[in-house]
Length: 509
Image 1 (tube, rainbow, N blue to C red):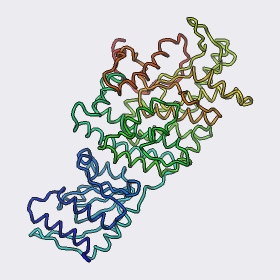
Image 2: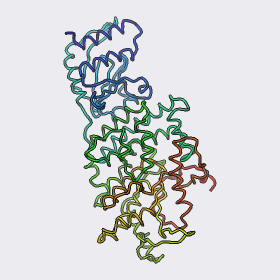
Image 3: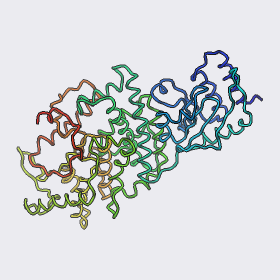
Image 4: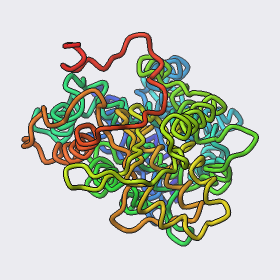
């Protein structure tokens, strides 16, 4: 029986003999070799994906199409040592836990960015006459390499810092893929339509680079939120992830299904599936064990996004002012507001006050609470905790109070999608943990909106369907901006010396 490795080398030699062989010429031969040695996988080679920054091969289990690894191939003669220093490989290695780098003759295997040097393979070398000289001593070793490569899965992550760092690496990769896909498509393409939707309703001057960043973060945090809420008896897959998102956030469900659900652009599937596999194997129970709980240590949720952004894009963290008020300061501010309401405004229940006012014939709560730069919801979370103190001995009244007197008057505005998503997740988990069960059509009144602009000024008839979802979110926020005469403001503004929020309202100040 013919040795499949020797057959592979014979094909490579035939390609070289034409004098026209390029890097992509040998892909079919490598695909056949991988699938021959590992018959339970498919080595997928998609030119359209490669043009957008995908590795040359995504290796999938035939059963379930689960990604098990990636192969990046360079032309014969290209130095793999130099390739490892390129920006491309600097993106791949932290994000792709199981990667082979090859020039079709030599093979270097990396697991969790560490090279498995004991399986550093050279199947053949090329002499001065362009003839292959087989290195048969490595043939058996190569079979072991492929066997172990297709059997290596994502390492299980079990703490927030490790998961945030891995998500950040994958987000960087998705960011670059989205930007390349945007640049390669026509102006009437899907990504162009989505960017135009954000421009029409949320941020006028949004640039493609900023859009790619928003896209990457939304995918990462949308999947993360979905993974946190999926039932233990269900299998976590990308196509149904939107249905696992908390029902407290119907907007995110719609948005996420548009950019990462069943209709996900094929050019982006491989990168999103990589993240899905990381989250599928993450020990979410361990990661969430302190979420929504007040302990002597800082709540992991408070720092999760900061840790993510530190690894993902420290510059964005600075320009957007993503720095967190320490928990003791948050507690002090919230308690001080509660005391002012009691002493200065003679409201004996403070933040928990549920008295009503008649405004133009409509009953409205007297004490409305707003964080106009809510971030991950730290201040609103502290407000809920403060109010809950009143119900510690009468928990049976808590659910009715939340539905009737808390959710209708607790508001937050956030411009960035990732912290917006975390805020929904954080407050939703906290309320559920305290015994509240959200109704099917009920949502938290945290909105993706620009606090310093009025969405009605942007027009009520967006030209793109995608923009309509954003418009509806903004309209709901505008009702709060316009219709509530008295508001308790909590929180801190973003910590940035000069705001990058340059809307018309700001310019006219």
